[in-house]
Image (cartoon, rainbow, N blue to C red; front, side, top):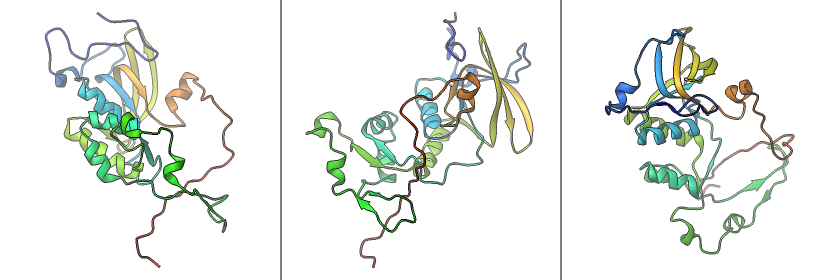
Length: 243
């Protein structure tokens, strides 16, 4: 029995009434649209959001395929800071010690007009700048903010996803998709072999970033406050005792 369709597909059955193993749910099968593969959830984007979603679904016994057009994890220190709620989610996944070990406390913050500007303004007290509750220990056992850039977090999440049986495919791109009452039909391309295939999924999750191909295809606009005209962030460190 299927539920009412969602924005991109229907709930589907992660496990059927006979209790089939998850490895049997994610299987190759025929489909009127000549789909070569079927999966409960197709996740587009293997950044922190896509890999975390894959792990969370796996924890609930739901198989996924994650496709990422990049050839590898991000080696750039973007999306640097994690808040305490994110750390609590990672604790639920059994990843808190690894994330804490991969990161560090936020120590100093500077503001400059441009990277080349000789003038810079340092925030005088980072703890005061981040302060929004008098007794944070009553709110959470986690640090309120933890520095763990995407270049450190992504490899950790990828390794864990694969250790737990996750299917993550780099150099693989979502080309197009359509939806019907039974789910989503997606065309994906292998950028290495230059071949394409068709996949059926009950859900398609758009985790493909600020310039989301999925969101653009659906005509979903990003709304909110006026955008920045230009912003640049740079993270550096200086060893203790350096001249």
